Length: 298
Image (cartoon, rainbow, N blue to C red; front, side, top):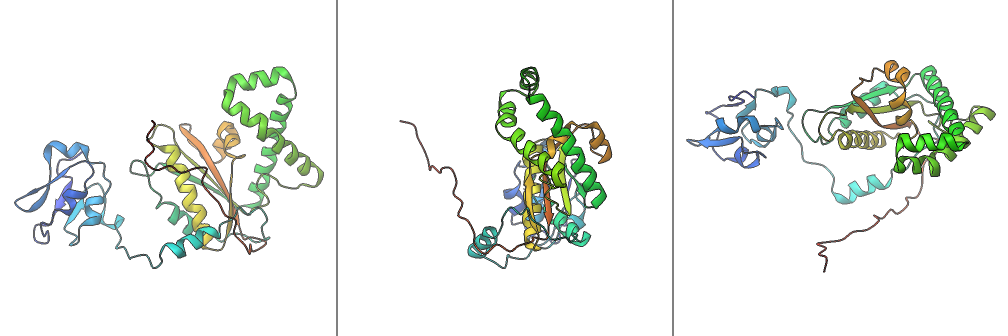
């Protein structure tokens, strides 16, 4: 890291020390009432931008982050009640109108998704957007064929033993108790009348993946997906996070190549989205499994 990573305008720096206080790793100090990089802590800077973002006079900048990366913030125009009411309107949507999702809306969703917290800058999460009907049809048929193989393997003891050995007890239990039954029903419906129980006929799909060699990549990917889900809701779209798609894309060399997923990236989650066929009139109360404050074992 360049030891002159912070550039300070001494004329506009008011010496309030906010940047020093907010720096998570103590990479800045006050010298003669002017902010400056601590030479012996320069390498500890994680380029989070907190110092620049908090400066009231815009006297500070980071060489590693261009000025256009920073935007003036406005105070939120809503409080908790409005925010909570917005969250309560979210439902998992699996019935969609026969209407495409505008690319303009997809761009807005991706813009909002990029604001998700990241364990370590910069973002390492990538997104594949599939919204062409022919490509969605191709992927659906691929999913059906893949799960045919899983169902067949689970139908005999040798196949089950091999899967358990390859996946481990936890994933094997999920496959046995949930995935195989879902896939069996989905494939039966597809072969009967082409009903889609994997993507539910959604006009758009987002697949999230990230380098497995980066810090907190799994958490980051799921947070990006969550932000995309809420952004879609704000645009009047319906969504559902789908767990049956990521493992298939992850294990398929053909799909990885088709969607430009690097070999070091892991496919984490996926989101279907479209215009809801119906409007939900009532919310459903959700509670956490449990909450404890300051628990001390006696």
